Image 1 (cartoon, rainbow, N blue to C red):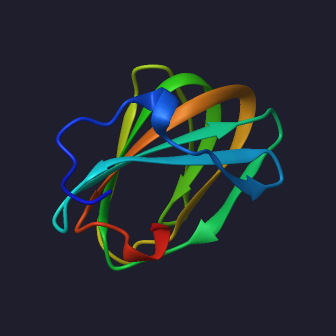
Image 2: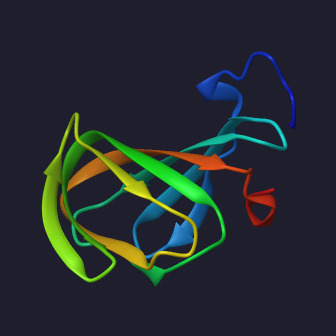
Amino acid sequence: MINDRWVFHDDVTPQDQGNGVIRRVLAYSKDLMCVENTFEKGAVGALHHHPHTQITYVVSGVFEFEIDGVKKTVRAGDTMLKTDSVEHGCVCLEAGILLDIFNPMREDFV
């Protein structure tokens, strides 16, 4: 819940987004949100945009990301910055986990 100081992974209900993607909304306030996305190989994060600034950290796996028309392959330890309203999406090449940080929070996720 909003402004919870402690958020334990085992207590977060996974949300099946379909097509091999599971979302877990972790700690968040109205200004900042941390979200974990688990992807199966071949899962697609469709191209989209939103008015939030987003940083994505690759926890594990391999992904082909497209940001503002540019495609690159990213792996564990890599990060990407998506400023507000830039179009972005990905294809999971090797099963993995992405950690997204949003500013402000994604109200549509809760």
